[in-house]
Length: 201
Image (cartoon, rainbow, N blue to C red; front, side, top):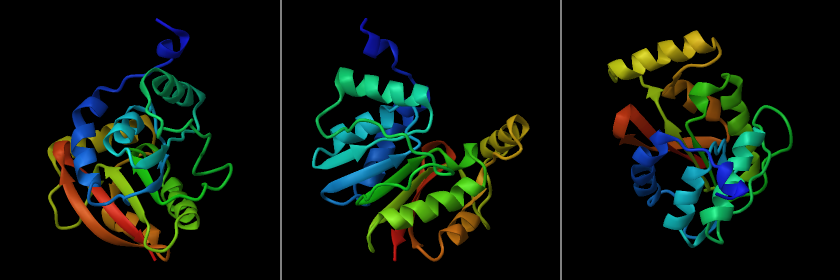
């Protein structure tokens, strides 16, 4: 096994949800251009999406060195040409996001401080042209929609691990998106998750 392969991280949840995520994104992503992924983690989503959408370029990013090492290792071992080298980006500090044709953020908001939501919205708005999509995936709580027991337990576990974490109310996330974005679509996903499309205005 090479040194690059040794650095690869594996997430069991990615194998379960990467197909449904790619299916949902088919109607949301542009036909061409650069998709900036924020908080790419292991890099497995970026790898799968780069394969699924060869006309797009995928720019993964993560503030953690071990995550960027994993992304780079996946890219070296299996990555197609449209999967770019990872960037060191942190929504709460560091440089602004590079210009992009879409921004994608998978499973970050509930394992980050609430301030990260507003920062994601602000930096994404600066990086995107009017009409471009910001796409979020993960668990959310919605008004007038019963919360699944699994998400209630997950939220309690998150808050016990870190008081600044927790499943976010979708209505609060939409409010944080103002004035840069308007919500456009909400897709119900497996395992009590949502894919949410915001459109830059």
